[in-house]
Amino acid sequence: MSVFDRYLTLWVVLCIVGGVGLGHFFPAMFQAVGRWEIAKINLPVAALIWLMIIPMLLKINLKALKGVVQHWRGVGVTLLVNWGVKPFSMAFLGWLFVGNLFRPWLPSDQIDAYIAGLILLAAAPCTAMVFIWSHLVRGEPHFTLSQVALNDVIMVFAFAPLVGLLLGLSAITVPWDTLLLSVLLYIVVPLMLANFGRALMLRHEHGYARLDRLLQVLHPVSLTALLATLVLLFGFQGEQILSQPLVILLLAVPILIQVFFNSGLAYLLNRAVHSPHCIAGPSALIGASNFFELAVATAIALFGFESGAALATVVGVLIEVPVMLLAVGVVNRSRAWYELRSGVPSHEECCPVDAHRQAGK
Image 1 (spheres, rainbow, N blue to C red):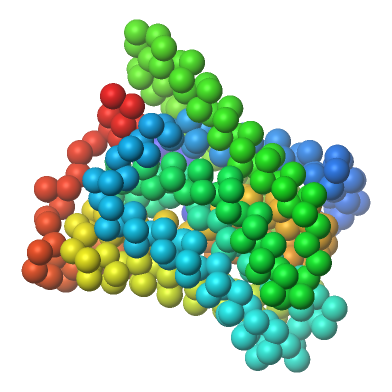
Image 2 (spheres, one colour):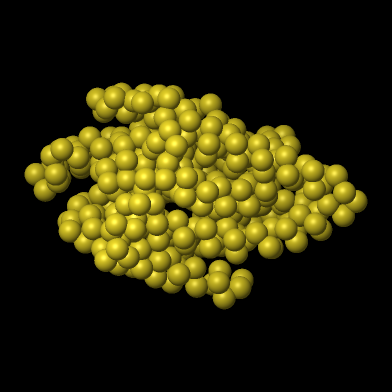
């Protein structure tokens, strides 16, 4: 890992602190950037998110979907957690904590917006950082690749209806035109562009070598866009964060619970069905992590920069990296216990390498 990658958590913390400070001292600058929008879609945020996720999506070969049957138990568990448990458990946790237990300490006019932000955060599984988490737990790369590809395809069709359903249950009016535009802009178009670019590059004789070089060039671009996005998002929310530290702390509670609940559930279910550890690890982390880029952008588009929904998704960004690194540590340290179960294959039986090359062959 490069120095940039190795100290990513430090850079994230510095960008969060820097964004909050800039937002506090130069609010007019961020308000001006917030006005650069078309059809409620903020252009700077959209550009940064594209720079962030398209390099990651270049790794995804949709042909890898044919490999999902190889580890069907792990795929089934991950799909159950991602789409059948996590959005609904987060809606419940939002209702329980934000709507009831914490209501006396939260601004009454933002309660519904906070719950909406939590729902947006949980309604889409992560597509970018998952590759990093999977690498850190020595996950089976073909499984990670095929699972992410499958989730991306499902998101195209399921994200908007699922969010609409859960927001409707929370008695929030759903602006369907903006929601569908967000799906098109942040899921469909980047996925199409990335797969078109990948296919075009792999037509050449040395296509995989060229793809490797391109990914190496774009990797720091993607991480830089991530850090710039953090500065921008925390700059937008800087004043609220400084003036409402209790709100940040309270919103973090249901997010933390859902991360540990869903990762633990996926991990234990995989052990119950005898998935190897190199499947259970990435399955647990895919089940727990969120596509926060999409959540933040959609919250901004639906409710605005200074809304409770945007703040709730930004709190998700605030704790995403450290909490997921903690989950990675738990998965790694429990490997010996996991493999004690009869019928669980060893790591060596499970894990080939260079998934983004082999999946297309």
